[in-house]
Each structure stands twice: as structure tokens, then as C-alpha cells.
Length: 198
Image 1 (cartoon, rainbow, N blue to C red):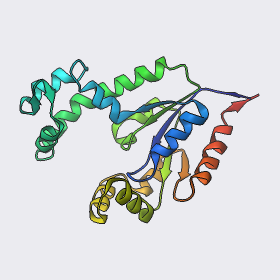
Image 2 (cartoon, rainbow, N blue to C red; image 1 turned 180 degrees about the horizontal axis):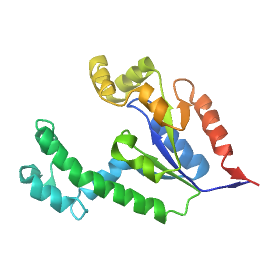
Image 3 (spheres, rainbow, N blue to C red; image 1 turned 135 degrees about the vertical axis):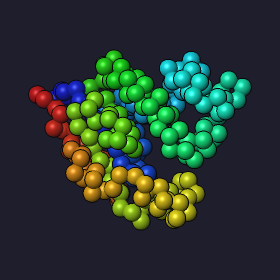
């Protein structure tokens, strides 16, 4: 059996366990994993494609030639126009960098992960999008254990992300990661089996 090359998008809300799914795809299927948040961070470092543009637009956020993310966050989350300006710098360059990485990959399976997959326009680069689902109470519990978030903080973040109903309509595959991860692996293996040819 041989895998036919697939470009897969992975999305889902905070606390749904996307990292577990990504690690399984990498370890079991040798998938090339692209994390959109990490790409955005890399291009915002000195020498990165977005660095000089961010420095010019947000000089108050630059400390010792580095972008201070805490200061930058304080600026943009107090001012919607500033947030829009930052997104207009970072998002197109992030998409361009991800597209180049997809095109240059020799892996049979390339996986692009983002919590804002459709909002960012990443869906146009992939063959299909998987939604990693987890029930609300399990997400809240996981976030409390892994990040120390209170119930209120977790709900505040969850309620600001795309709803389960919207994700269900927009995505191509559904992975329920609410229970034992062995069950999650079975779902992933079943989907991947469709990519195999004789």
C-alpha cells in the first residue's frame, strides 16, 4: 500500500488536543507538520519577513532590537485599528511562508495547524480540513490542568473562537478527541486508510 500525497488542515478550539493529533500524525505517518502560530513568530523575529514592517508600525514595542510581545499585545488589544494593522502585516506573510513550505515538502502527508483556519484563509492551501473536537467540560478540565486556567478564563477564550456548529459545517473530517486517545488514533487511522493506493 502506498500513500497518495495529501495536504491536511487541522483546526479546533483551545483545549481540544490538536497537539496530540499532530504528534501522532508525525510519529506514525512521518507527516510534515506546519504550525501557523510558530510561522508567524518566526517571521516576526529579527531577519524575518515581517520584522522591519512591525518595527516601523509599532516602534514602542521594540526593546533592544527585539519585538516585545507583551507590549505589542497591550497596544493592539486596546485599539482595534492597531490590531487590524498588525494582522495586515503578519497574516499575508504567514500565508506566503506556509505556502512555500507546503510546496517544498517531500512528505506524503503535510499538515497545517491553525486555530483560526478559515478566518486566516489557510483553507485554500489544503485538500481538506479536519476538525479536532472535544466536549466542553473536558476542554475546561484540560486547560485547568495544563495551563492553570480558571473556568471563567477558559470559557472566555472558547466563546471567542469559532463555534462547534460553524466548524461542523466548514470542515471535511471530524475527530472526536474527548475520550481515550486510543479511540482518537483509530479515527485518524481510518481516515488515513482512504489515502492508500495499491
